[in-house]
Length: 618
Ligand code: GLU
Image (cartoon, rainbow, N blue to C red; front, side, top):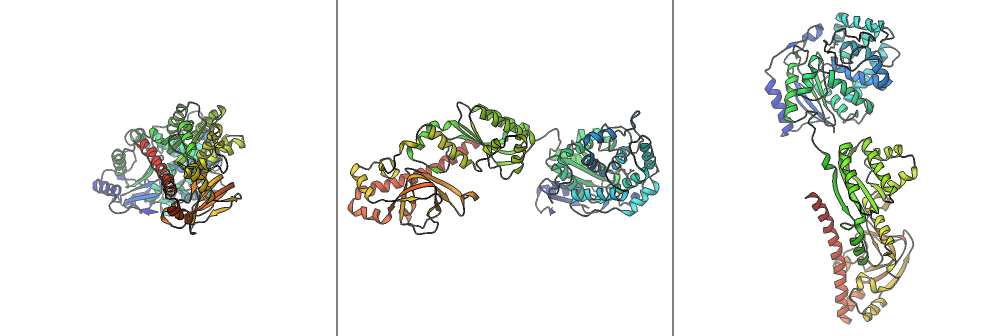
């Protein structure tokens, strides 16, 4: 567990908050469980845990106290995991009761406790945990808390025995629940497990982490362990929001705006879904049974950091990071000038939309609208997930539905850079029954690969790819503005070679003695490893030249160049080039200029990329 560093404004705020209320002595320590009365009333800790597992601590953040009622929502979550919400709702309701926590408030007809946060509901819930014996039941409950806290948990024997000796009212509740068949086995054993569950020792830091785990959709952000099934997190948070703070639940949600739960030992746990968990501990309780200082601290935190759930940060417009067409920005394939011109003219039919942040309904809806707005007669839409940090089920379904409706109109759709979000592929596969469609969507890992393919398809459609005839040097970058005689002379200097698919044409580090023209096929440029591992940084097609940098600086080859399919090249030696300076200075100058133009084109591509990016950024 990371701890906060000096100079952090967050840490300073927590320290100041603790100092501000340290002398506030409102309220009384609970005494109805005799052992609780022994608590030092001055103890006071505040902790915040983020959903990426960072924990800020102030004051007595590592002092142990008993979890008490804060155990209730978590055991409710375990019961939901064991049986599903449908069955559990038949046993315990979800309505706020307005009664005291230990009231014997059961539904008049069914006998169901009104909610799982009052003792009657909590005891009924503990009774639902699947186990052979009371020991096994508490064993499972302890294991569950260990998943949430990431550390071994233990029961405070003294507090447990103290409550067991005096908990007659809870025993009475247990028997009533048995009477209504809400509990079906021995109520004494269930109430005993409940007493032990309430006597589990926790620290303020544990509470914050328990909260952060719920905020993180049930995944402990430090250990990565799943503590509760994702689909039940919202159920647990809902009962906390409506019933978690005893008879102050309405006032709490109004003022603080976070699902929370408090316990009679003085702990309060609050959760801001998706963002953080808060744990506060201070034993003096107010008239409603909530820790008086914790209440003030949480209220102030909520106000200062604008954490109220009903005032969420607005993020819908931030989900589109970048959008462009192939008329504005191209793949890393270096193409013949005529092809580049063709893409500039017709590239508006290929759309790339880079998404970012969390994709849910409200952040995906603008993406869907944006894609549908950019029509005309689109050939392809590439949706890039590289900067998407999280995505939920509805967002996946919306994007798949969009892809399907585009596909029906004959538009190619690709989802790229989904590797980090393995959920996307799994969810798409679960949603789409046709495996072929799934494969097609994910055919290209990178946007660059997908874009290159779409450009090829577009050029093919426009019959642009056939314009270059093998070995006719007129249309090459390097022969621009050369006369017929000069081309004829230049042609005598070239050495033609054929390369099988996969053949390495040049290797990184080797001495560069020539440049070569691509006269057939496509070559890939690999930096530091194979193409499959994502090392293909660029490619070149017919009419372009590769390796011309060495003509200017004489440096060794900087990358591997590999034939992709059958390739033919024509090599031009640096030595021959130098000889031209004496024998044919004009030709030498023209070639030098063409090499410079080729380099300038590559540089221009870089600035074009940058300008697309900055235009979008405003
Ligand atoms: N073990 C306590 C009881 O049932 C828990 C009460 C609470 O924290 O609200 O009385």
